[in-house]
Image (cartoon, rainbow, N blue to C red):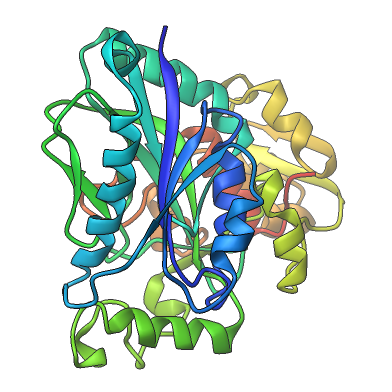
Length: 347
């Protein structure tokens, strides 16, 4: 029987307002426990981490002499090594590790997808699982899609392997056969108090280079420009564990209910469950834009946009993130993004 375990790293998580509690709590229902490498901090990170259920803490000291972000993979591998050493025999052979950084969360809607995909990966001889990414920019309702943003990364690995974190811990290496899951990572690293965010970016830059402006974590020119990140609206749901934080940071959880929406397309392509969650009293399905009342056309949504629609700017929602490595959005998620663009959201 497959068993899941978590691992992560944190340091100065309170000082920099990381969503680390939310990250660890988001995977707690999936795992036996999580091993967390807690670096010596300047705040009460260790104390607060110790109050989170279902985790085992290893205390560490960051090697600040490592540059190019290598200290992050070094710390990640400390947690991973500790987790592996706590397992043995058949327990290790059937174990998978889920890795989240302190600003990443899993959504409870994806738990069954993830469980299913790990079982499929185990049966198929895969040793790593790629998750899709939603990168939130400056608010919980903008998703960045520009080429600089990675569309997916390995966030689950077979523990009985030589796979390890590398570089600045964005991903892993030495895996042989990755499985691509539709489970999502909600990345909130760029949504926090602006002053705290700036300080975090400056200090993180020191992990890469003595010259802050050379770091990927700090670019004063485009730090706050939404357009440079090619953002699109997102009014879907967030992980339940994030609700309190979203409200604390001044965002709202959902849009007000709407009376009606017109969708051009075939309703059989969308599940009743998805439609039931739309915060709209009445959904009208039509097979062409010509059947939408003239006063409703601006808010109508096409399930499958034509090339002409895109050229004329009738929708700014891409069919996938703009990285050449990106895979198309699932159809229901694409519809959600198109509805979000028009000001419709989930309940």
